[in-house]
Image (cartoon, rainbow, N blue to C red):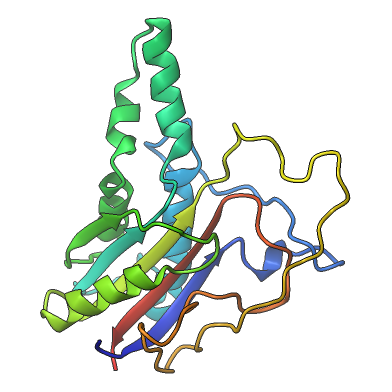
Length: 226
């Protein structure tokens, strides 16, 4: 397996979402024009923006050149809210808003990010099993390495996004709060070299310690071959 080097990282929520006690707050995602009824696409777009800004600077820089950067979205649950909205409209006999069909395809938001940042690489969306919120699945990094090794792109923006399942009952409702799980080792910092088949948690936490996430959670890594 080809070795990868992390160029930049972005997260939602970030360290700024922690309150004074170190617990994660519930920040509001910036709205994303053209997308409605779900936080999934805004989650993907905002996390990607944070990572890309860390490496490239502002998206609207006048000297922004085309970049052979691929986009790879990994999500075990996908856009649950849009799926529920479509199901509810169909079951009631109401007209399903066309916008929901557009945004139900995860490539829609990836295309928006690619156009804004002038990214010309492939666009891929996968649903790996056993995805853990806040971590990049090893399968996603392996696929990123293949895209790079094949010469399809110079860099790959890997986004792992999981939307909170609002239809499910709150975890631990009516019970004492569970103890926070032990922290896993954080990812290599930008410039270091992770090995996909030797890094079981390349998207592990970084920054201040926080309880396991219960809301919308995403991490983005911009990687290239070492």
